[in-house]
Image 1 (tube, one colour):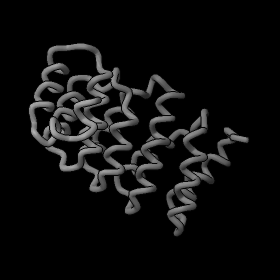
Image 2 (cartoon, rainbow, N blue to C red; image 1 turned 180 degrees about the vertical axis):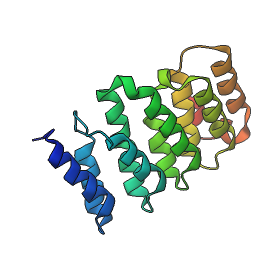
Image 3 (tube, rainbow, N blue to C red; image 1 turned 45 degrees about the vertical axis):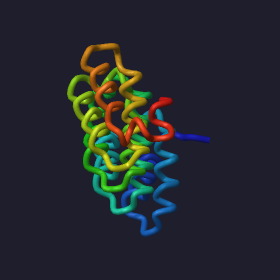
Image 4 (tube, rainbow, N blue to C red; image 1 turned 90 degrees about the horizontal axis):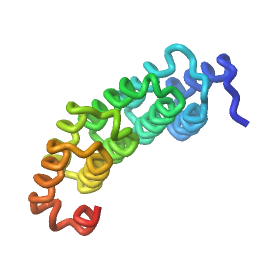
Length: 168
């Protein structure tokens, strides 16, 4: 059973930040992704874990917890989208970039988000990252800029010759 008791949430946040065992840290983040009443600085702490943790599994777990946070708190969706876009741009591991992109709410990404996703569509070395970016772009509101980003990405041989990207 999930609890929203602030002291329990705080304990799990501390555990996710400080435990020596990355598997247990990921489990703590899984719990935190289901919390509907986060503590005051939970967003900031999850962002920190998503951006700078040394374990890519912990980073991906923090990204998923951030996405859940945005679902429970739509008033924070714009902030969470900006943070997820930063993670998508800066994470070293493709798994973390895919998690960040896949967690985006397409309607909340805005023009800056489209610019970042378009850059990932054209320039990321990992096909899974490019596919995730294409899928989010395809869910964005219909605009000339979004259409142009998708069209331009599909002109790139890496994307047009990929097994999955043209089908997306």
